[in-house]
Structures are given as structure tokens and as C-alpha cells.
Image (cartoon, rainbow, N blue to C red; front, top):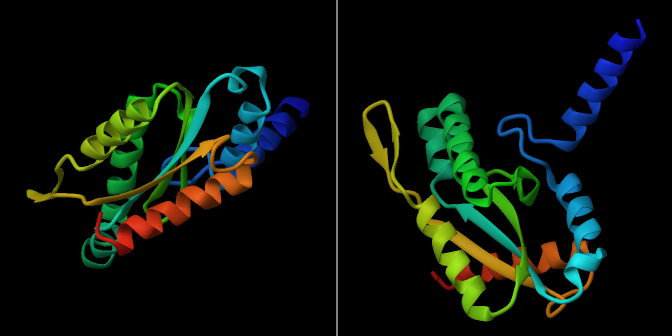
Length: 171
């Protein structure tokens, strides 16, 4: 009975902290992980970035192809991001088609630019569904610790604002 109760408690904990479709950490867990990281000794001598990415075509895929296709698309995106990051704790699904990436130990702006370019290229790879090919378009924004903010909530908010600005400006 105790083993079964423990198993149920673990399942409830996972469900409350992870996205049901992609199994990635959700916003709450990502914020906790980010806060833990930026308050750790590892973050003191380098820059840490929060990259926010969003796929424009998600709503179209969802409305024209349905829930199953949209879910498959999200899982594909999540798999691409986790394969790149090699650590699912550094990737989270925030909502819709928005994901956050925690990018630690950065030492130059060129390094973050290179990573952003790689992530965008990765997400813009064609996605095939039922014989048709879709070409995702990515909006992105980045915030950096300690340059833009020194707490997790503000870093996440700044990354989202940067992404909204890039979307509005067509970047």
C-alpha cells in the first residue's frame, strides 16, 4: 500500500511540474530550476541566458490539422530542443508553442548569438505530417543574467518581452 501511495505522489508531482504533451518542465519548474542555477556558485563567474522561442505556425497547424497534429508538432519541437541541449532540465514548454531554454556558462555575446542561430535553425527544419511539409518560423528573445535581471521571474519576463519585440519588428 505504501509503495502504491508513493507512486501516486510521484505521479502527481510530475504532472504538476511538467507539460502533459511534451513531458518537459513547465513554467513553474523552469523558474525554480533557473532560480536555483543563478543562485549557485556556477553562475557567479559567467553569463547565463534565458532564450524564449515561439513557433508562429502552431495556431495554424492546430486549427487546420487538429489536436493530434499539433501535439505531434510540439513533441517534435521538444525533441529537437532536448537533443540540442542534452539536458531536459534546460528546456521547458511554457505555453502554446513557446519554449524556454536555460543556457549557462556564457562568456561572450558572440557565443550567445551562435547558440540562438543554431536553435532557430534547428526549429526551422521542415516538419512533415501526412505527406505535407511545413516550414516553421521562429520568433526568439533572450535575457541575460546578471546583465538584464538578477532573479528568475524577471529574466523570464525579459526574454518574453524581447521575443514579443522581435515578432512585432519582424526579426
